[in-house]
Image 1 (cartoon, one colour):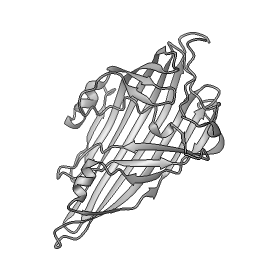
Image 2 (spheres, one colour):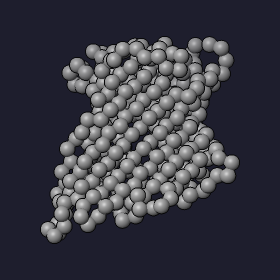
Image 3 (cartoon, one colour):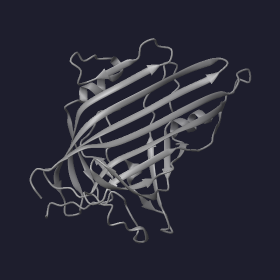
Length: 294
């Protein structure tokens, strides 16, 4: 039992302690997760009408390599398969990839995704549920190496300890040919319990997330805003989380939301630009295999 990891996937203050929502991992076991990320971006005005979308679905194996004295675990994550579709609304044919297909197409857009199939990287799952890379990645690696432990599933308490909060970032994953890109967005939630749900033959604690989607004002957005006036009101999206308390594992996590952005350009002859940014994330447990009876 010394190899048992009871790592809190939800960082908690004493007032919010939930001992039934904790990871329970054993050295030698393997969990398989599917991570689906979706993003759509549109730009509309009299002088422009463009849009595009990107969807990637990645299957991962997560092997528990070791458990430290601090309660953290070292995991080996392997990309088993990837499917993807990238489309610019002006293109007649979308770029598509299915790494399991007999005759695998090798579209240029997904060349880096395909190159990672079969590769493994080591990550550390901290006691508070934060997953960080231990291996150095190539620049702009598109693979979701740590997303089966989503930031949005790490519940932290407010200063008063009266409620939980989570934050899940959605980085821009593609740019259209004319240079416009889907700006980074963050979804902030105040999760609430919503009873028990059964999935994959196990009972799960269900949390409703009610995420608030808003632009992240990073360096790119601030630089753009120096010349243009940007108006972007936060919106409420959808989200939920299922955690199998007895088994100690995340079973399902999903978030989705849409942001409308209005940009007033310096050239008064051009009408304001209306942008639409949609993001969605789904993490689903596929299988859990123990190395030996517990």
